[in-house]
Image (cartoon, rainbow, N blue to C red; front, side, top):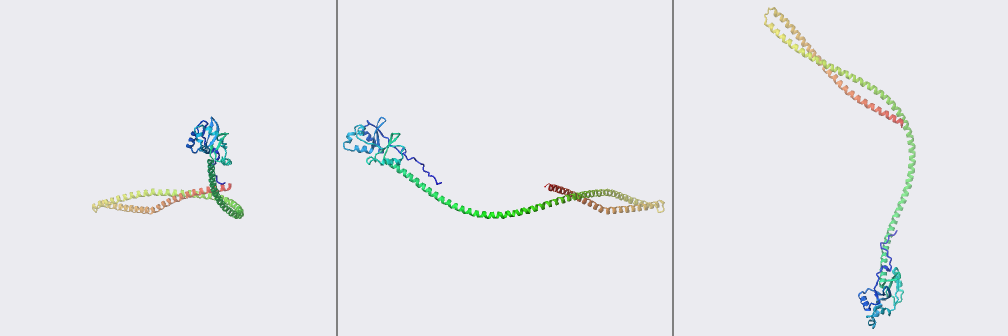
Length: 379
């Protein structure tokens, strides 16, 4: 839609124009009326009234025209305005206050030439409410035409802008039409591609259906294989568990043997320590016997007995030393073997713990496999 004018619509009737409403009683002296008209040069005339009744209308121009005649001032100046009215016969044009200005101008211009410039009497509901000069009426008409002209110019500018806007919109519509044509071509291409894709999808659907059947067969085989693996796994797990138990028992026995060896070695160490002490005492005793024997005379029988005892003690000391040496040698030979057994025992413990962890992992894997198999059966 074209843009609306911002100018506020006016009715352009006589009610919008300023009206003169100077009223004079019939008994007022004419010179007083003259003085008032001279003091108010914009007054177009006056009404002569008696009470509320209007007796006549005297235009300003006619009043001064008559008063300027010879002897007129002597006749009317000091007398009431009624005398002036009685000697002046004027029939004014009356127009209703709701009449449009153009219509009022046309009516005013259709009067006789002598009365064409006389003021117009404006009425409302048959009563005179004021008077209006033709010049004021024409000026109002000119202002109205000017306002209308400005409105028309503004509307013309608005229409030009609107026309330019329409042209731009036409260009946009043309571009949009071209785009639509291109889109239609693209749609046709897309439709052909969609048909091709649809055919491919149908083929893929058939292929997927075949693959789905194959997958179902594979699932069945997988379930059967899983069941078999689960049974074999349980058997293997049971065997592994039995083996672990055997290893644990063997490790415990080895640990007990090692502990027994430790206790025996403690006893050997104590015996060796005692033998060493006895050996030292025997050496000491032998030394003392030798000293006593040396102090006795050579032919003394006691000396001979002491020598025999010393020899026996010496022989016993040698045997104790030899036994102690043999025991120490055996102990030194057994210590590496016992250490090796201890290492094997510790290593077996580590292996057993790892086997326990592996067996737990295997058991968990078997449980997961069984759950997967059950789920596959339900699916």
